[in-house]
Image 1 (cartoon, rainbow, N blue to C red):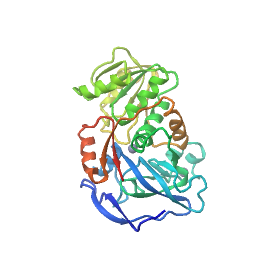
Image 2 (cartoon, protein in one colour; image 1 turned 45 degrees about the horizontal axis):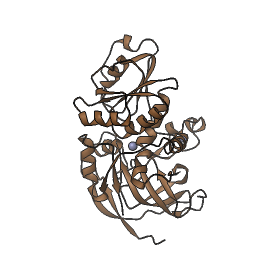
Image 3 (tube, rainbow, N blue to C red; image 1 turned 180 degrees about the horizontal axis):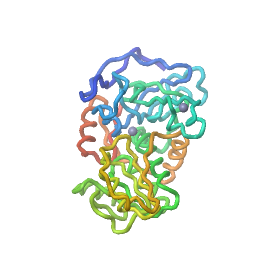
Length: 335
Ligand SMILES: [Zn+2]
Ligand SMILES: [Zn+2]
């Protein structure tokens, strides 16, 4: 396959400035990496946190994007699982050390020396990207490139959040009904759970969207649900939702914070935490999460709702996400 010398990429040079379209050299894979021709790359809220400077210490300049679907064009000499032409997905967690306590105990998501696609490693807002062979996954055939992209972060983080919400739950609240929520709601409903969707106050289109997907109730994030929840997941980066979700949750219930960034959590009375309620965060993903999600998604089947943009309109896609104007997930498409 012909590999050109240079590629188009959307690059963040400094936080809080628009991405700039640049012509850069096509990266060369090391022996443990594959070179991928990017076909689609999802636009995630985390990209927004990087661009807006809310996540400190990105590699700069950086090519954002960590929901990459593409075709392998070149595999390093240590790569045996993938070959040229294979369609793969590349997620947020792009490298782990394999040696620290967390890596050795099934918690590679908490690795001491991780690298993250689109944050400390160049990502998929570009025509080509390289990725560590251990953090590449086969993409289920039934999905188009654009439809598969949101599974790779929104889906994965959502799935991990859902798993950590607990096994014995029937009523699941979801605060913030965007990319992750719309995927996880479908899996939860498929597994017989009742989903309660909480949206920005007055966001009737997000509420309709949730009900259309099968939620039993949809309301404002400031409302109490008609019945108490067994667990809640908060995807919206809004700290005041933590006490709101605790108040809406039964004893023993878990409130999972699924985002990488959240505004401050206001103080709250101990009695809304009392009776073994749990607040926990979810960080990153493990390969096991990815394997499980990519196996279950086509069975449900999870339908991802996407709005596609050409690579050159990455800034528009980010603005629409920032303003809450997207339904489902934005995906950049490359020819
Ligand atoms: Zn490690
Ligand atoms: Zn993400």
